[in-house]
Image (cartoon, rainbow, N blue to C red; front, side, top):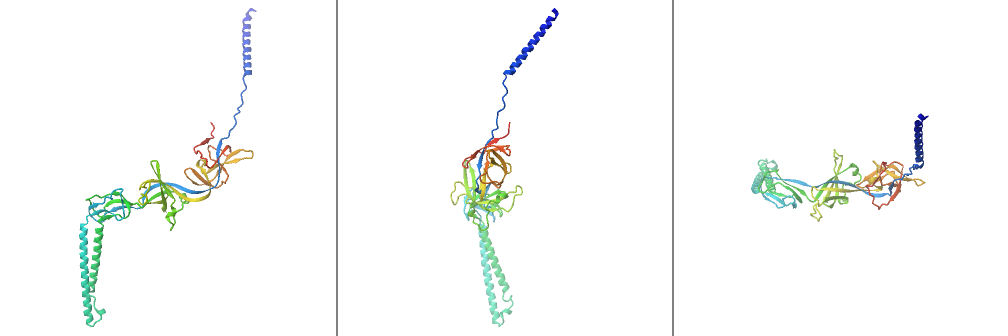
Length: 410
């Protein structure tokens, strides 16, 4: 009996420990709170919607180009000689008038040539007068002989000599005219009102015929060559034959200089008859009157070579709807608000036709009607039929076009 006491004691201790552990476990399970159920509910995103109304829109096209003179001329010497005088206005940037002398070539040899030509003409006229007198005398002698004048030989009447004398007079006149022209070409004159771009001659320099002496350009008009797409051509009032150019004063050119912007009015002059083979662009040429403000004062001259932005006013189109660019998804879809009888608001995609677009807005038509409410809040990953809450935006309200709502779950 004494040998079983330690085993009995060990068993008792083990049972006690087991009972205590079971009691603790039971107690802990009784006092632990039951897990709370997830009571988070779905909150639809709030989007801004716009109530559509049709508008009559004057379509416009933005483009850009470089200002160039209407006429630019490379002056060349037509005669040879030493430059004897250069005008003070024949310098880069100077303005001149039509007919103004820009430079003069030594003309002493050309004066001598004119004198010689004049002497030859006088001698030729004297020879002609002499031959005419002799011919007349021979005619009188022939008639006094009782013969008919038509039977007289031409050589006897000196007709070949008279023709030769007349030809010599004509040649002498031509020589005189050439000498006078050569003399006048020693004075290099401005062919139109303009400005000097570059001077290529200097005092004392010898010029030969064909040598370039400078580049000038006109200041009455300037041109800008504007690239536009073929689609843009359909919305522009292109010039027609016989139409007054002033009636097409529908282009505004803008040049930014520092923090200031200067504007000029221009007219559509023509559309070039070619299409660029690389980018398939058409080119519209607009013309600006008095770009340097020489006739009427301007705040700033529109200098040749300047880069300008152009806004071209096009046709007026009725029944278009205006939307901000961020309301368009893909190549032409919008989110239209639908509301059920129980007040549930959902957004659904709808295909539309984009008629025109500018930097801020898109003008649409087709499959859209007056009174439709369109979401103008940009949604990331929108789903067709998604539930939303809305806030109506009035036309006078300014919307932040950078605001977006992400629908991507974390």
